[in-house]
Length: 127
Figure 1 (tube, rainbow, N blue to C red):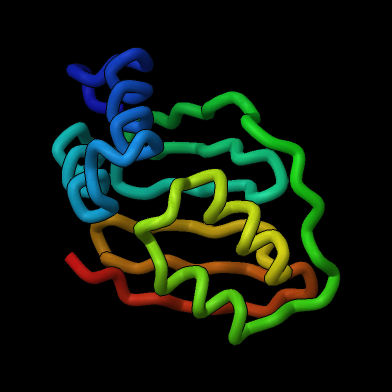
Figure 2 (tube, helix red, strand yellow; figure 1 turned 60 degrees about the vertical axis):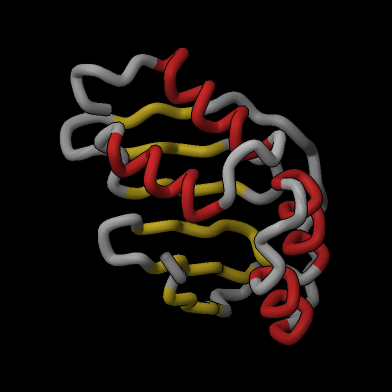
């Protein structure tokens, strides 16, 4: 993270998003203003890796979801389109659709969701 962002401050940004105090767009803005350029999410555990130009910070696992072996693109797109649901519900639903991991690139305003068998959904983020 940048020199000004501590792990505690990052967790405050994450908590505001997970409790619904900030929208997804506001969450991305806060991360960008803190020097975060992208992050990866492991859907099965909820573990996130936040990356900046010179460092990265990994969060602790939050859940233990089973990823569906059957990739359901339509279900995944429906869940991805509903960014107003709580984060852990979002993870559960995309796990059920067969998504195992995703990457959000804040600078490129793009998210890439990966399925169990290499399937991919690319989303241009609205900001």
